Amino acid sequence: MAFLLTFIVFFAVALAISVVGMRLWVRPKEAIERVTGAGIHVPDKMPTHPSLVFHDLIKKLGTVLPTSPKDASVMRRRLIRAGIKGENALKVLYGCKVFFGISLPIGMSLLVANSESDSSNKIMAIVAAAAMGFFGPNEYVKIKSQKRQKNIQHGLANALDLLVVCVESGLGLDQAIVQVAKELEQAHREISEEFAMVNLELKAGKRRIEALRNLAERTAVEDLKKLVAVLIQADRFGTGIAQSLRAHADFMRVQARQIAEEKAAKLGVKLVFPIFFCILPSLFVVTVGPMAVKIMRELLPMMNNI
Image (tube, rainbow, N blue to C red; front, side, top):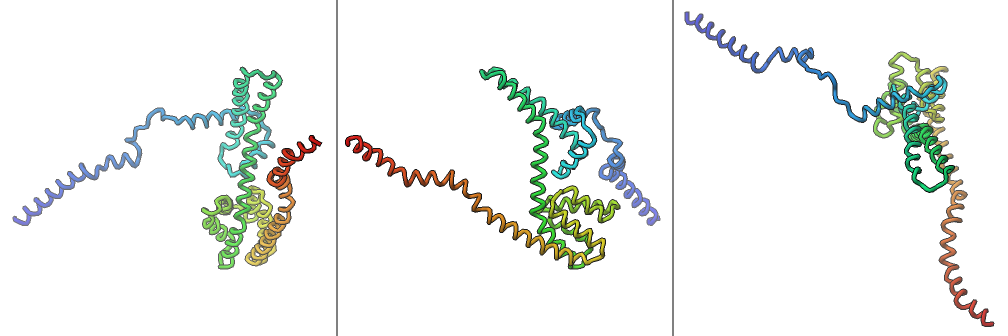
């Protein structure tokens, strides 16, 4: 009897603790609602940031400008070379052309409306503002692509040395590209992004030759095109990739030394104009100036007296 009473008391206490715990701490209903999203109240209209509104306006303006498929493909290629790979990058570019092509002439017309200059000069200023607003985004993309190509060119030597080390240590070319992309993520971000893109294309099922050709086409860097050609030839003819990379690294090192020597040889010719227009006038002022002042003060009065 005592054992049965103990069991009943234990069962009642355990049941009471379980019920209290389910009510106060576990709360399965709230957990289920949190997982399924049933209890989340979503407002009908989310607040929109002003920058997002402006971005949407630029994209809508980008659909207004008529473009041919050929020009669109060329501009998309330029955007990719500049590192702008968004889905709506082309629409944003055309929207910026339309926006600045309209807003800058309006601002210039308001600026020169009360000026006293000729009407022809005012018209020329408005036309120049319109041309600047319409062609300015193209120049921005061009400058950014040139800067990115220069950064890729600067980091290619380190990337090639790392490729040689990875391949000679026993890694395959695909794994070596992945490792170089990881190692150069902080030092040379542009070339790391391009190698990571090659890895993604290989995972998507493209052939290695096609992925390497896409790399050369995206960057449009001559030295990287040469490296891609070396890798494609090594893969096609079955030669050792490590040996080919080592030979190409030596070639690039010699080429870099020759470029540096060429720049050093051109330095004397380039210094002629700064020396002639900036340094020589100051030297003439310092050396000939006191003598000219002395001649003007003493010699000319003596000649006038004679």
